[in-house]
Amino acid sequence: MGPSGVSTLASRQSIVRRQTVPGGLMGSAGEGVVTSVCFRPDLRASRMQNLLLAAQGDAIVHLHVGTRRVVHVNNEEGNRINTLAMRQDGAIFASGGSDCVVRAYDEATCSLCRTLDHGDGVTTTGHTNHVFSLAWHPDDPQVLLSGSWDNRVLVWDLRVHRSVRSISGPHICGDAVDIHPGTNLVLTGSWRSNNPLQLWDLGSSRLLTNLPWWQPEPDGCLIYAARFGRGLAAGTVIAGGSGTKPMVRVYKLVGVRHSRRGPYKFPKGV
Image (cartoon, rainbow, N blue to C red; front, top):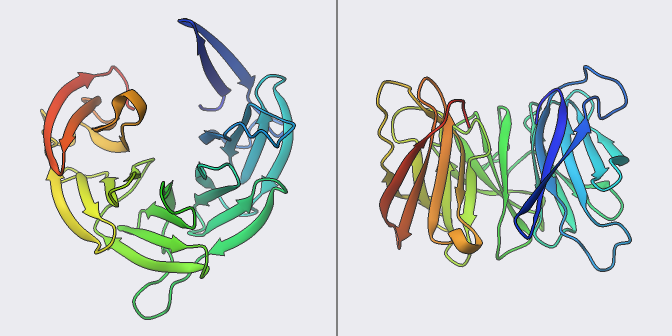
């Protein structure tokens, strides 16, 4: 991702194919770098498959990968979109960015269906700084988590159109919030040196453990991305970032206990 456009990788029978969608997704260059992408699951009821969503500036661009055609554009005027997330069933996608608002869209019509910017006014509120990460609950399609510069992860319930819980502490600057299926275990990766990688209980918002994040030098690698492993990588946590010593670390989880694999060093940030 970046000013040159979007690259997609496809693999079949060990053959990797790279396809690049040129920059200037809106038809004119210079409207911003691509900051987030997500695929829509292929839906049997849909006539169009292989659909990719890309955030560029204040726009959510819907791209058909096979033809590289722009299918639709959602504009969020005045916003700088940092993150996109597609719900597992492909029915709703969400966005977050510089205006501190989380928006949910109906995928079939590409229309806005929820504006999430407040809480109950007593125990919960909306975000007060840039939103950088979104994660749909894998077991409850009405629950969405968002992470922000405001040192909070907010839990949104689409049924009541507001935040219902918050996790205080994580300083999220990238795609670094995730939920583990079947456990209500929340993973956060904070852009800081002290205890950046943490596991939380969603029901109580309680911190369960800090995963070790040793750095060879101060601020050598600050976390931008963190995820629970899926599929063949199930039972792991993967996290990475950038700095003078960029790296990716992989952890094997047993309950909330952990053992570290890696680190795997990279010449550039993750």
